[in-house]
Length: 111
Length: 112
Picture: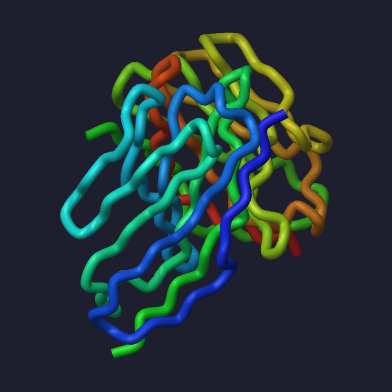
């Protein structure tokens, strides 16, 4: 059974800092891994989708990596800004294609 | 871009009412999902559907039903709303794997 874990649960950094969010999963036979952003009271916005055959994906200041052998993914945010403050969720599908979510990392970027 | 539209951002309903939450996607996705999200409990899957007129129970289906009469529309039904169904409800859709999910903006339901 797929389980997804995220650490840390919360993170507070000064503006401009580079940071890494961590995601681990138990079943390495995943189809893909997806990173989402959620602002308070809002839905989930997809940031990056990494297919199982890929090692990383980049979008602007965001870079996500995938290491299936170790069961880990990281989301790297370069030059963080106050507007990056949100909850970040990673998710991977289980064997029946249902998405399994981590509990999220709540990020605060201080001006 | 794929768009998933949830008909209401905020709803307030009375205990015992029948409540319909509507979700429409515009990119011919086969799969559609309903989640609820509560503080400390994360996202929990209520029901999902892989095709028209097809439905599968998720992790917490009790008190809910769904309808998928057309490919683009997936409705969540609370037969008799209760206060413990006060929550944020999120709809999502996807093509068959290995493609990702797209979520709607959510419906905040309050049952009083």
